[in-house]
Structures are given as C-alpha cells and as structure tokens.
Image (cartoon, rainbow, N blue to C red; front, side, top):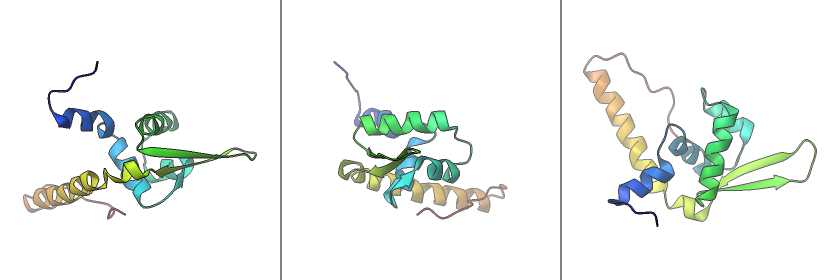
Amino acid sequence: MKQYRLGIEATLEILGGKWKALIVCLLISGTKRTGELQRLIPGVSQKVLIQQLRELERDGIVGRRVYDEMPPKVEYYITEYGRTANQIIDVMCHWGRDHVRMKQQQGEAIELLENEP
C-alpha cells in the first residue's frame, strides 16, 4: 500500500520533475505530436519526453491517440482529469513570472523568454 504524509507528495509524484508540469501546460492549449512537444521544450531528449508522457498517461493526465498510418502518427492531449490540474499549473506559471520579475528588480540577469499559452 502506497502512503503519503501530505497531499503535496501525491501531487509532486504526478507533476514533479523537470518536464511534466511543462508538458501539461503545453497540452492544455491543445493536442500536440511528439516532435512538436520536443521543439517546444528545448533540452528534453526524445527518450525522456516519451517516458514522461507515458507516466502522465499512466496517471490519467494525458491521453494518446495513435493513427494507423505510415509513418505512425501519435498525438497527445490533456484528459478531462488532466484538466483538473490546470489550476495548479496556472498558479505555478503566475508564481514563476512574479519570481522572475522580483529577481529582475533585484538586478539579476534573468529573462522569461515567452508567455505561457
């Protein structure tokens, strides 16, 4: 039996790590193919991206649609259950923007390259 001391442990197990919250954030704006996600997330390897997508799929956050064509076409989308994480992701995005602004005001050379979808 899996046990958690606090609810945030369960949340971090699902959305924690370097890429998962970003993947969810990108998929909330619409269905994406693997290559598209990889272009939108510089620095993630295809192996790690697919691993993270599979974990999110296993946890019911992301769905995968496979088309019967050659070469194979696979699309990922946010599930209805995954949309319930939108509030968490949105708060994290807002906090991150505020954090960057604060660091800029303190004179740190830091930049937010794009606005979130």
